[in-house]
Image (tube, rainbow, N blue to C red; front, side, top):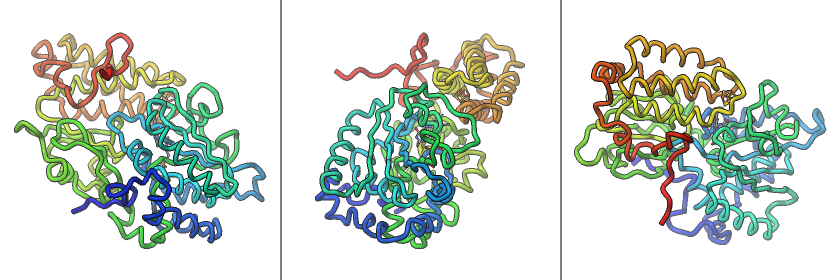
Length: 441
Ligand SMILES: Cc1cc2nc3c(=O)[nH]c(=O)nc-3n(C[C@H](O)[C@H](O)[C@H](O)COP(=O)(O)O)c2cc1C
Ligand code: SF4
């Protein structure tokens, strides 16, 4: 079976939120090992492992760490920043890591700090993750009391609910107390990040994988998964129209088909698979014919999509792809920070066109107009949020064009409109464009 717990190792058998229990499964031994090594040797292990970022862009962590200038070249503090903002629709893996194995994250932070000779770590946690915040805070207190920090300061900072603050440069702005808007680059954070000092910023899952890389050694880690480009495991957040949704830690290279039909139990109520979003709402959709794709970087790129944030959203034949496009576009319109014109205006235009199509008020030419709006956003924005809005919508139109046409010819939605997205994506308030949250009783 391709399930393999490296990041979540031991969490099914013991309460790893407790330091003693975490030590019982070998916890903090990798930190001792790393601190016995030269920082450059730790970076070398990361490079050899080819551990790549789990936040979305899949950039090799070791390479990013190797870009951090040496203290003698740039006499400034060096910062480690952990991106725990987790706001990509469909993604809920980092919260499980923080909730169940907070010490593995902390151990990863301390090893990473050692690797770049940093004394300061910041964990920027999504504001809504209050329970996870409390668990991580308690674990930090335990680790600090045990003297594990060895002079390193770890600050746990709560975000205030903006998706754009997950984008690394907006996150740094927000951490500095400013409005969370992306910076223009270069310079990149490795050169000029937090407080204009060299900064290594990585996702929770990436950092929580570091102890395993050090424990096994980079070369051994690199044998797991689908080497050479997709090594190790990833936590996939499986959701939507599937029997057993949840987080599954799998070796990279596992088939998407197996995740949905074997591990996830398939599509309930005898419905048929229609499409799959393989990496969070920002990535191009795959059709049912494309699910025999391995969950690894190269194969997914060949299919024209991405592993993104690891959120696999399953869509059955009840779902309206126009309505899905509308909801996704509304999300990006709402979350656009407004700093650059193609994204600020283009996302609004996409929503207007999709509304017209869904309501049956559009002309056929407006499908090409919609694709043209996507094209004018793609690659022309200050940060990747613009692309994240344009890529999925363009893929829905291209791959399900007949369905879009049927809306125009038939004067409206043949799938029952909003209700067709039940279980796939939360409804959006038509005035505020906020997701309509379920209020706990
Ligand atoms: C709009 C937007 C939102 C993002 N949100 C997140 C997020 O919530 N968590 C995350 O780790 N990365 C997020 N990213 C990616 C980060 O910018 C960055 O690539 C990542 O934190 C780097 O860590 P990694 O290399 O370990 O993946 C987002 C990017 C964009 C453009
Ligand atoms: S692409 Fe959108 S979110 Fe990113 S800077 Fe431009 S307006 Fe802001």
